[in-house]
Every structure is written in C-alpha cells, then in structure tokens.
Image 1 (cartoon, rainbow, N blue to C red):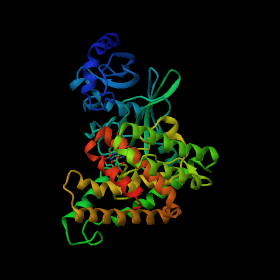
Image 2: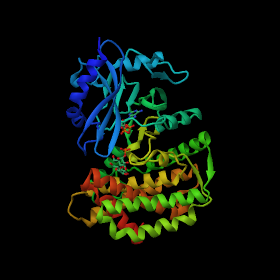
Image 3: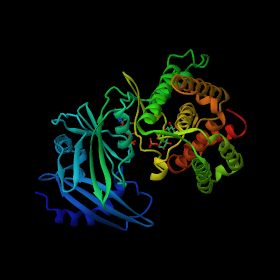
Image 4: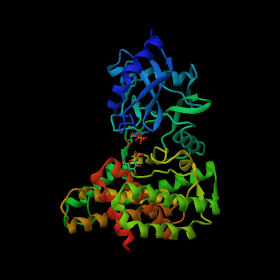
Length: 436
Ligand SMILES: Nc1ncnc2c1ncn2[C@@H]1O[C@H](COP(=O)(O)OP(=O)(O)O)[C@@H](O)[C@H]1O
Ligand SMILES: O=P(O)(O)O[C@H]1O[C@H](CO)[C@@H](O[C@H]2O[C@H](CO)[C@@H](O)[C@H](O)[C@H]2O)[C@H](O)[C@H]1O
C-alpha cells in the first residue's frame, strides 16, 4: 500500500533531477528551484495521483503525475499493468479525494482494455486503449475547464460529424477553480494526419519533374476540397451550439491591437522580421475597416494540417485547445472563422515548402511548390464555399489573418525549429511585396 507521506518526501528530492528528462515537461528552458507536492491521492494499492508545484526563476507551474513504484521510471501512465485503472474509474464514474472520473452522458465503456502511450512528441501524454479510446492526460495544469473538452461537448450536442466523440473526463478543483486533468475520446484507428497526406502528395509532385500537380498520382486537391467543406461545417456547428454575433467596435479594436502586439513581441525576439515590420503593420491596420460588421464566434484557434485526421468516414478536426502560446482570454475570445481558414491556407504553404528546407536554391522546385500550394488552397476555399461564404470574398482580411499567423509561426519556429524559420519568413516576404 502506498504511504502518501513517504512518497511525498521521495518526490521532493528526486523530481528536480527527473522532471527535465521527461518529454512532456514544459519547463526545460530554466533550472528548477523547488518542487512541492500539493496533493497525493492513492488510486489503488500501488498507484497514486500526484499534483506538484514546480518553481523556476520567474514562474511557478503545476503538473500532474500518475505514479507507481512498480512501474518503469515510476510512470504508471506508460505501464499497461496499471494504466487500465484510469479507464475503469471513468467507466464507473468514481470520485477519489476530489478527483472526479466521469463518462459523458449515455456513454458505456469497455473496461478490460490496457493503454499504450501514443509515442509522439507531446506536451501531454496520450494513451490508446485497445483500438477504441484515446485518453489525453494534460500534464501542465491550467485553471478553468479545458477548452478542448468544452468545444467537443458543444459540437457533440449539435451532432457534429467532424470530431472524435468525447467519452469522458477526469477533473478536480484547485483553490476552488475547476481543473481538467484528462479527456477520453473515441479513437479512430484508420485515421491519417492531413500533414502526412499533404507531404506525400508534395513528394509525389517533386518526384515527377514533367507532370503538373493535377496529373500526379498523389494529387491532394480532392481532399483539400473535402477538408474545406468539413471545416466550414464545424464552424457552422460551433455557431449553432455556442452562438455568433457581429463584431462591435471593441472586438475590432481588440483584434487589430492583438495583431500589432504580437508583432511587437516577435520583432523583438526575432530580428529577421524587422525588415517586414512596416508593411505588416500596414496590413493589420488596413484590416480594421474590414473587421467591423463581420460575424464572430468560437473557432478552432490553431488549425493546421497536423490538427485534421482523414478517416474512412471523412475529415475530423482535433485538438481545440487553441494556440499553445495564447492566454486563456485570447483562446476563448469570439473571433472570425476566417482565422482558421488562414491557418489552414498557411499550412498548405508549409507542406509545399518543407521539402525545400536546407536544399540549395532550385527555381524549378520552388515553382512547383508554389503550383501545389495554389491548387490546394483554391480547392480548400471551394470546399469551404459549398457550405458558407467563399473566404476569398474577403481578401484583405484573409491576407491580414494569414500574415498574423505567419508572424506567430516565426516565433514558433525561432523557438522550436530554427532551420524552418525560412518557411514563414519567405511567405511574409512574398505577401508583403505584392505576391499571393
Ligand atoms: N481520436 C483520435 N483518433 C486517432 N488518432 C488520434 C485521435 N486524437 C489524436 N490522435 C493522434 O494523436 C496525435 C496527437 O493528438 P493531439 O490531440 O494533437 O495532441 P497534442 O495536442 O498533445 O499534440 C494526433 O496528431 C493524431 O495523430
Ligand atoms: O502543437 P500544435 O499542433 O498545437 O501546434 C504547434 O505546432 C505546430 C507544428 O507541429 C505548428 O504548426 C506549424 O508547422 C506545421 C507543420 O509541422 C504546419 O502544418 C502549420 O501550418 C504551421 O503553423 C503550430 O503553428 C503550433 O501552434
């Protein structure tokens, strides 16, 4: 039987060295000055749920661990002998010491399954149970109900066909505020990421020097069109479930100020962006007159080809948490759905250009990358226009949102993949010099 006090003592001494070695730990950029276990909850004889507070210079954050002394590296989430207990408790709707395990209304779960970690680079830990369920355990804890869960519930309530169904959750309260610890969803074993499909299509095109994008085997335009249709449907479903309103003066001012503020921060961090600062500011200012009177609503918030899955039944959108760098208020603000469209259009550009990263300049390949991008961006907009207004009808706004996303990407690449910085920078160069 776990002794919570003994475990707590052990964690205080070992975690400062162990945390930086864990893939999901988000604080690898600064030393750890202290680790304080806030709450230790035995879940059964040898598994405990632990919430720790981690002090680092300039920040204090809370993380959750699920620990067993008998599991490799003490991590019970990765232990198939022990991680089944999370699913069983969700199915039973148990509550343990303020931790609520709950299934969604009307959902019946199979309880005999063991979990296996999904094995991708993640800041969370996702476990797949059998071929049926996926449990995303949020490692860094945030106050308030998790946005991914809230959006999934809303979309489910209106019968949205383009999401993986939410099945359950684990939650608690910290200092009187709700905190989502994990979300259980339907797992689609046949799902392929849009990003992988798009990359394959681009590679096929590059391999056939004398064929056009429309002629090669891996043409993606049909899928891009269906994806546009699916994204527009999800927007319509979010509007139906959570409402929509017309942007007033405050919403317009906030939107422009948000884009200018982001530019301030990124220009300071990434000097390569400075030469485009003036035309970027002008594009954001120009957006002001097009932002008034447009409908705003809840949107996905971080839409790109890595957030969409192709299944035998069509396209699904996943991960409605919003941009990792954005604050809670920004993620939950009502915004134009054109922002998601812009995110996806940027992603087509990324898919085409990633093959050119680190390669010597080759005009022919660059031309063909552009051909792929144009074809698939157009197809996506056509699919979107089957359900809602054609995004290309609002070209200035779309351009401003694309540029704003590209500025975000400059910061993201600078921090995470410096060799990819040229991808958003070259798009900004092209778009601010009059190119498409
Ligand atoms: N319901 C699902 N069915 C099948 N695969 C999924 C499902 N949800 C997520 N995945 C896979 O897991 C990966 C990570 O999921 P995601 O929600 O984006 O987590 P994170 O935000 O931590 O990156 C996805 O890119 C996808 O390949
Ligand atoms: O971790 P998330 O999926 O929430 O998103 C972050 O990481 C993405 C990279 O994985 C980043 O997306 C950028 O690169 C993608 C290709 O790897 C490309 O498809 C996207 O268009 C591009 O924005 C995303 O911006 C970031 O929030």
